[in-house]
Length: 88
Image (cartoon, rainbow, N blue to C red; front, side, top):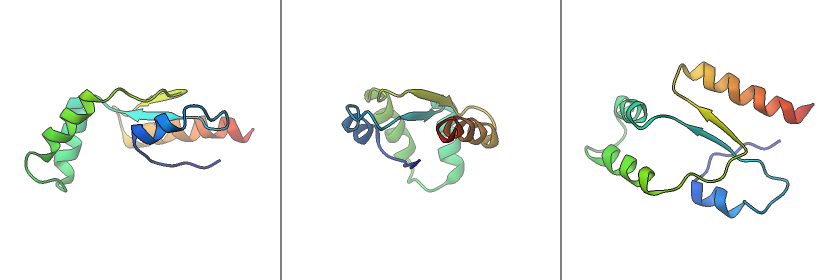
């Protein structure tokens, strides 16, 4: 099992690979905005630009979706549990 964090565009390029499973980890836009702003790594206005770009892009096809709208540990547990299914 290999886990990678990449762009939706990259994931679309893997769509025809039968040995690749895509997992989309996402969060509602308002929550994503507050998390990005709390990190403080983006210039003013960059968060709004990033969120605007996200609305223009269609999510890549994913075999599994995790909505990261709660505690980080909950999303991490959901990801771990899904990955463990492949180890069995």
